[in-house]
Length: 395
Image (cartoon, rainbow, N blue to C red):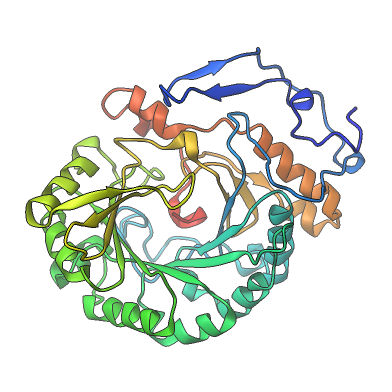
């Protein structure tokens, strides 16, 4: 049994070490044979330490970011996330009693921060549908890392309710917001969003967020072949010189309900090619290690644009994200099939030591690299894998 002085994630406890070569980031090389570790008594350990600067997973990726889904409900029916034919009037959502309370979310967030998290993003579903979301933002915005730095709180939204909530979110302590917008024409946007919402509603929300100082503000556009790729250049032109960072996302096989096919993917290279034909662009360095978007800037100083190439150029080897579902399950990958239940021990009265060690143990055993494995497969072979829906754990 490890002692209190031996963190749960220490190599002696994990019993297996792997690393990713810099020259070939898709090749995983084992340097010791993995073994199933002995059962751990979570009450006997204490993983707290003065500076939680590193908690590596099984592939030596640190825990840095936490995404928290606050609701499984949404006011849109985007075809790549909650297609209306699946999430229709007969769909059963989680009962309110199953959702983590704001106090429970705050408590778990504190434990994740102990283990190295410095950024928290609130997602859904549509997080602005959660009543009193500003109260949660205020609770989380008061948290600090072990080094005394404030935790960065951000939020992803479809923008439908943003105009009326932007200022109150800023006042509560929200730092940044990312808005999903998949086209500028109502016809394209309404087809992608499965709704009758006007683009003007989302643009009004974006303007309100920018006026409130929720920045740097980012706009995400999911690109699906045959549906909205002709909007790539108009979107780039619209957001140039606006101070807003526009990012294009390859259509991903998240969940099992969106009918994903590789033929529907417009690659990041093609997206950048279309933009560069109209506006010359230059590549930028990442803002930080593990940043998922490739950064580019307009050569004439017109601002920044990005691409998230999670299908054609997987970045699993740099992923530092954990995800907490609406009902308190910890998922270590956007494409995971199962999550670890934290709500049950939380509500049964377990202390912080037990909960912290549960989280640390789960992360230290993490070997997820779905996108890299998908790239190694052929055709749509990965589509047969059962995966959690994005509306449940957030994008």
